[in-house]
Length: 248
Image: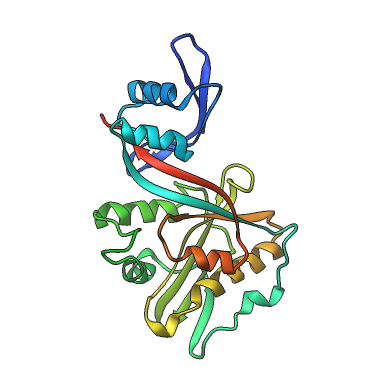
């Protein structure tokens, strides 16, 4: 839901998309309107105590210096399905012997094992509150976070075990920072499954192009080695942003 931040005179000084993150009120894509970062941060800290917001680094660095907690530093990428090449054959792989693709039809229990293996302690995206993360994942799959799950989402199975996952949601807004959005892509880190990330990305692109989607975007945390996978798959870097928790 689109909302505005007003100053004491009733003037719009920022816009954002209202949501929930970390089970807290969330101002996503916060964009200033004719206001300096220092002044915007002062207003945020006064009017949005206990909120989480995502914005450009020049705003978030000021917020960090003022006592905010940086919870994520991310880079946004996009693949334009209208102008960039897509091979229809990507939808089929090829996968290593013994593995198979499927539609996204598994339960949270079936896909969560690979998720925990993919983000162990020490990984930049490892979470310290697994119960909260599991609830957030369930909400994501239910379409309560970034919109409904799209058919270009996929799974990779090894026998009866899910070893690779890509979730694409129908996010509000227009590309490159809105529209179809990869909210999760991960694999079991065992050496046998190396390369599944790229194959899942390409399959999503092929299925998305077949469905007439305009583009597919994603965000990746600073320091995550998966960035090179997205670059290799020709996703284009479009924005750098940070997410900050405002103190109560």
